[in-house]
Length: 167
Image 1 (cartoon, rainbow, N blue to C red):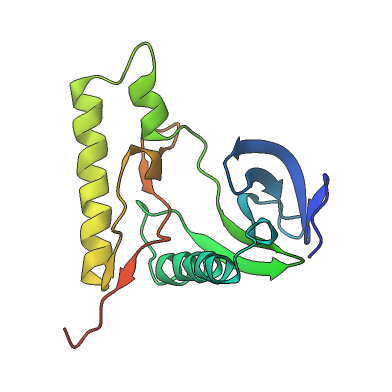
Image 2 (cartoon, rainbow, N blue to C red; image 1 turned 30 degrees about the horizontal axis):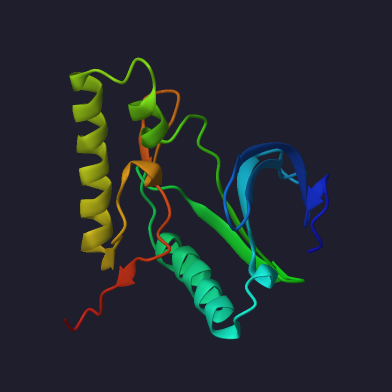
């Protein structure tokens, strides 16, 4: 699963979508079926504290597990997760559009009707997740992607809590 400039595993990198403190999100293509996806990479090897590295690894796998339990048009689909050579990878649905946070900071932010539509969509997606026993716990504009068609997509279930059915 070695990562280089051109490939991550079997996926061919076609561009960079974003960069954060712990890693990079790439736009990639699955050569087997031609689908475009997003690949989130996290540099676990840069965490020198073993406990912190394990906490981050657990968070990533929890994100994949909790989002993997959900199948909803308002939630970013997780396809796979992998770890190799100090890097963790989450392979997920590509949302062709910005984060709500970016839209709110724009010179011309969305109008009231657009925002209400996005909030309704997010509420429906979170209601679905809650009914499945998943509580997001970190909903914020940076964790809401807006597809070019106006569809809101909740992402980053990394701190989600999977609620026991016995509670």
